[in-house]
Figure 1 (tube, one colour):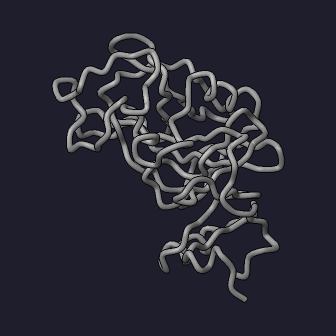
Figure 2 (cartoon, rainbow, N blue to C red):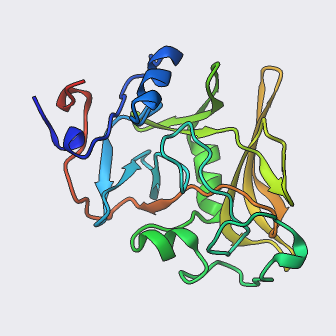
Length: 234
């Protein structure tokens, strides 16, 4: 039996019980390993995948530029629209605004409405209103936020200073909110022993390269039906 997901050549896993051998097999054949995602919603003309956590916004199931939730995606300096070979202060565009407008928001500029980067307060809602679970597998590590019967996964990726990836065992995600002329707010997550440390109040130099997680309004009209485990023929 075929379905719309298979016709788009996506393979979506909708189970918390994902083993590393299965992920490796799916990645080998070019599939997308979703870790985990229930009730995936197709939003916008490009059918981007959103997860509804019952917050004011819905979250993309992947970082911007990533092919699956376990991939890091692309790294950007704050407010810039292209990746770089080196992330240095002297090469930065010196963008100053309290919130990035659509012309400086890589998600809004690339994916178009209703998608965009999250604000400082939206990252804080994710941190404070969702259950958190640290994931430590052979092929991927990161944090899973769970609420409303759904979940999103953020892989550890670190950030790039010049050509060096730093804090590679941590999650770093840009907000679209500025702190001051030199820094912008970012979400930082890491584990120390059994303790998960999360913060949306961390500021980072704007010229550093960080990952981005797209969001869209929770009340946006969806372009296709909700995907559930029963609709998939694996």
